[in-house]
Image 1 (spheres, one colour):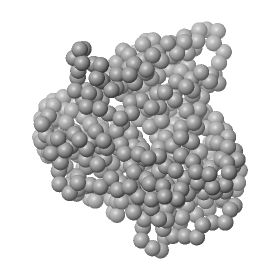
Image 2 (cartoon, one colour; image 1 turned 30 degrees about the vertical axis):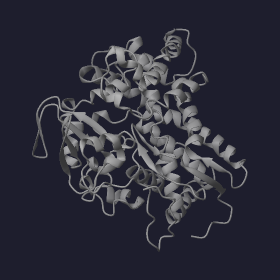
Image 3 (cartoon, one colour; image 1 turned 90 degrees about the horizontal axis):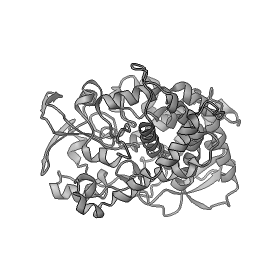
Length: 466
């Protein structure tokens, strides 16, 4: 369903939010292929939102979709090593040595994760927060200079912010990293059938993804230079993410990652750094349709910040803002679908999962499941109020996955979003442009298919009637 949406002042019916139409019945193999290669969300039929475990059979074998929190815990945490990613997904992110955390499995993955976890832990993110606030203030200054009523594509606007912030986190003041991050942010794009069917050498010329993967691999020399500089005893630059990666050690073995492993991980982190980019567009879209929530957010910002820029210490005090972010990612999760294949037979939610069965854990479905959430298609930040959140299984909410494979950059992404919205929402209101059509579409991540066109109003301008 592509909708423009009408705002709700809190007394009338809730606005209808943008989502693809749901097939009334399960799709056949060929229907699924045709629909999913255009938009994976449009292949999610009604039964998936009603039943916690759904089993299907297709031409390639058995598929089990799991929305039951206990089953999600089994697949993503308790028996994690038995559920590696599909080979097709691993091939897409196999940049060079094939050791990045989006394609490695088993002990190789654990070794990388143990080494790199401290590079983006709470202390590392806290150190980066003043820079994130500074960049958000620079964006606010730019927006203040735009002509009144000018339409902007929110995705494009925030791409520049995320590219610059990611570049600063990666390599400090080295601006040479920005074009690298920007190129990686477009990877891998839309899937093609050739991503899922390995091609023999003689037919690889038809591989749509081959060029994008070759472009990503061509960035190895740039990262080789950046890592090489940070290995030198004479290096006097900042202890940025790349420096921390060079000096990171596996806590169990004391080993450091090799040069090719570091380059693969840098490419992997760069390609996933913008995963949460579209959260900005969805958040402003939802606030534009729900003026009551927007007013409450403004009241919190005024009370906590009083018109000044936030500090790192302020961010935990913005409780309602975090609820708005969490509810946005419930409705429009950055990672909408996760596919695994059972390495060995298992039992999940009382059902036998045979070897090589594909297991689908789909946040897009889990977050809108009628057995897990009341009025699941309605925007309601109060779901994440502290007293409400404790009543719900933590395995019913997984915008960045869960368990050991939770996105390593999740804390950084949440801090950046919180800081940026705190800065911008103090000064501006974002409104859907007249006639704007919003249509969610997903492959690797979720985004609005036609962009998110909005106008930006100063908060001190007269408010639009609800």
